[in-house]
Amino acid sequence: MVKVKKECVLIKPEDLKPSSSDFEIIGTFNPGAVRLANGDIILYVRIWEKLIKTEDDDYFYSPRMVGNEKYKLVIDKFKKKLVENNSDFDIQFKDGTKRLTFISHLKKVILDKTGFKIKSIDKNPSFFGLKWDGELGIEDPRITKINDLYVMTYVGLSRNENVSTNYAVSNDCIKWFRKGVIFDEQNKDVVMFPEIINNEYVALERPEGSFEFSHPHMWMAFSKDLESWGRQRPLIISKKEDWDFGKVGAGAPPIRTEKGWLLIYHAILTAKKKRIMEDIIKKMDISECISGIITNKDTLYCAGAILFDLKDPKKIIAKSKVPILFPIKKHEIANFGDLRVIFPTGLILDENKEDVLIFSGAGDRVTTVKKIGLDNIFKKLGV
Image 1 (cartoon, rainbow, N blue to C red):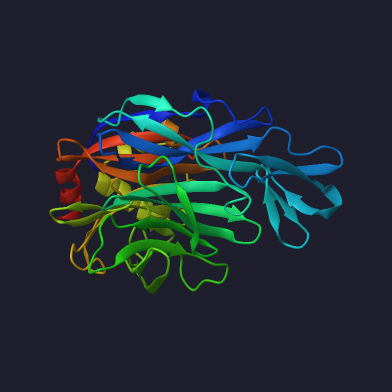
Image 2 (image 1 turned 180 degrees about the vertical axis):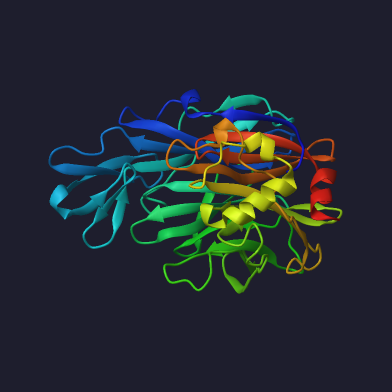
């Protein structure tokens, strides 16, 4: 792992109030992050709210946004005879479709220049689903500043568009203009490079589907106008014996460094990779730290690093051989299942230009920030 100079839990569910008495907040995590012109850092944090009452003797319940501009939702009810199966988080119908017992929106948080002190948190939802845009919720934003334009990508859930990636633009990172879907259903973890490269916008995406010859992995796409994306190509970043051979996706939008475009990404380690995991733990010299706390059942979301060529981002210069961040803290353990999570979604250069701030979701529950030296990351990359 890389050495973390400073870290803290920024936002927890108990710090905020739910949008109404019908809900409880179970997660405040996976924030989009960018530095403003005045030096402050702005986060758009995913607020995960679950219905307190999800069923009764006759019905199951599921929330849905119905507003065209304002935050407005209804709670749909479904007769139990239509339902094949259900869990705490979803309702599965006999026709194979499902609905959720939760909904997510985004809340704006302003941090000071250090990224460790909260200056303000919006009381009400700041960015949320609409009838035509993420009616079943909006999740996991990433924010990039390209020239003078802020671009936010986010996952939109809806009955018609399924799980897709939408985007919005802003001049001030406060008032947003929604532009709709740019990567269609079953496509997530979309991040954009912060510069126009060779007269094109560049994005990383992660398409996935139910019929697969390989695990979901990152692709690169190009656009002249942010609207139409093409020339997609897969990024083959690992082999079978590597720690990140499996489900991977972009984490935070890349940043420019003197050595290349730096991407912090996520990858999953599972019990099926026990031998690989044990080898990694030995290489990372953290066996004493995690002895006895990671079981064969655990699924771990870890973070790695990749360097892309500044002039040709299709070219990978270097990749971390082991995770640079490993979920070993208590707040990185999820409250459900055998799950440990570090999910980076924001990467910002510190004011000293020598360190970076990594903003992440931890344990699918809280938002954290870690301060790490760039030289430490480069060392792990071997550059």
